Length: 107
Length: 267
Image (cartoon, rainbow over all chains, first blue to last red; front, side):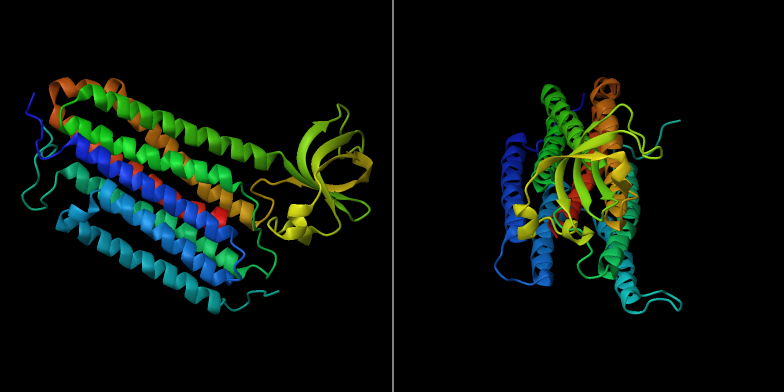
């Protein structure tokens, strides 16, 4: 059996994971509180706030749990292409909502 | 013949082959779920004002599932870290936790599906609507023959628009009661399954696909925890890489849920 990897410490990961879990619990609670708040904010603002918090959670999972912050360049290139096509997909969706195809029945 | 670069990094890519493979696979998964998210956006934006359901899903259950999946992502990472520091016992413990949490997520989701599938909207001949969970159905109940009756636990409304926003003050104040409806008074009825409306259709499609990913991931981790862990004795480095790759998939499943929960349950 080969030697253990001294660059990895289980205690370090346990501490990191505890922090990540705590932040996820707090941010999820924040999302729920925002969703149920009656502070007169518009629907668009509420959705923007909730999705922004979700992005923070996603950053924590991708950055720390998936080690994306310290990944190799090739992975970033792959993800760069993914982001490009994902934005294109969503962009087409938003574009399509404004210009329905000819013949679409609008109620 | 030995498969190259299962342990050591390829000189040109800087990573081992399986890692590049899983990232390419996850990139395709992003586009798969992206397509469904864009379908959701189109359906939601295209819905008539006041017709898109709000508050239909149990936020408490969704939040618990978020916590369960986040915790499982953490135990997966710790299982990999335990392999890295050559503590096989701890790897077994953390991965067992991941499996249990994955099963818990699926059970909670199954309970939620059951809740939706036993929830009925019953249109009566007098124009009213009985909406609630099916409590009982008489033995001779037959909608086509108009015989028997069914009992729901829910509320009676005059208009289906009253059922759209369950977070509206009127809906929250509504009195939940037992309603027995004779089949002869039912004009049509249906449960809150995928065919109920576009919201339930996209809800069941996205969460069903996500659930299949959780099921697949759980089975894969179960294999690596059980018979697959024999590789630890012969090739621990390669086994550790397998744990890392399966962990990346599991984290992705968690990532998808991080967006599904607010989009479906909170907005």
